[in-house]
Amino acid sequence: TPKLLEVQGLKTEFRRDGGSVTAVSGVDFHINKGEVLGLVGESGCGKSVTSLSIMRLLKDTPGRIAGGAVRFEGTDLTRLSENEMRRYRGNELAMIFQEPMTSLNPVLRIGRQLEEPIMLHLGYGRKRAREHAIHMLKLVGIPRAEDVVNDYPHQLSGGMRQRVMIAMAMACGPKLLIADEPTTALDVTIQAQILDLMKRLKEEQDMGMLLITHDLGVVAEMCDRVVVMYAGRVVEEANVQDLFENPQHPYTKGLIHSVPKLRQNVRRLASIPGNVPDLSAMPKGCKFAPRCPHAMERCLAEEPELLPVEGAEDRKSRCWLTEPGNPEGGERS
Ligand code: SF4
Ligand code: MG
Image (cartoon, rainbow, N blue to C red):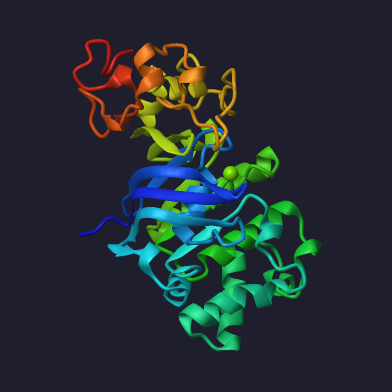
């Protein structure tokens, strides 16, 4: 059986200064049915561009997929026409963003916005779509849902708007939900409620999830596996426990800092001295070399590949130190 989602060699480019820059450069990962995959890294590492590429929502940025494949249950989404893609978007694949106002239409009542994808994808008539919309609003914990359908987005609080967006994303029972920093803009209490809600809905509907976040607490709470991105590349892949207990790549180590225990009060990514490289001025070898405390001469000349980590199952790292056969590499504490 094909994987729920398989991203292979994804490459996404943007036009800039009359030329083009590569924002996502050969990204590989997969998501199994019912699994939550975390995508972490500093901003500017290509996480959001990766998710927009999967959804084929690059038009406004403006960017384009320049190579690779995005297979959803075996179908390569990059090959679909815009019309065919529309059947997947909001139906089998749904996305929620950090700021709900960017995806809610400010001049349309909440009910109307929820009903449209329901009518389009589930083929319901207006009345049945209204009932389903109210059901979804109740499901995400919105009080007086029967009244809220008549409200405009600005009449709701930030937390309520985020719930509406989740209701909208979940309305057609997607098999995959892509959530880009879904709780970053919310205060801690609301954040916990929204995460609980997403977890519950995910389990009830056996949905896969791609969760993009800066917050390692959210990663520990929600994710089964994690992919770490740096400079448009995957630099590490691991299950969530291995990632926290024994990070392999120097970038991951930097993010996690001094190996914290799972669920301790480590929320934000630790800050690493230096900056994410500019897309138009990438270092030649390892893209992390300018910030890496272990950089060697080889790192400046040659870029390592993403390779399995020796002695560890389902783990990958893109670093000369963790290269299979390197006596200094492999699993260690
Ligand atoms: Fe650091 Fe070299 Fe590994 Fe890159 S390849 S992360 S520079 S040790
Ligand atoms: Mg982002």
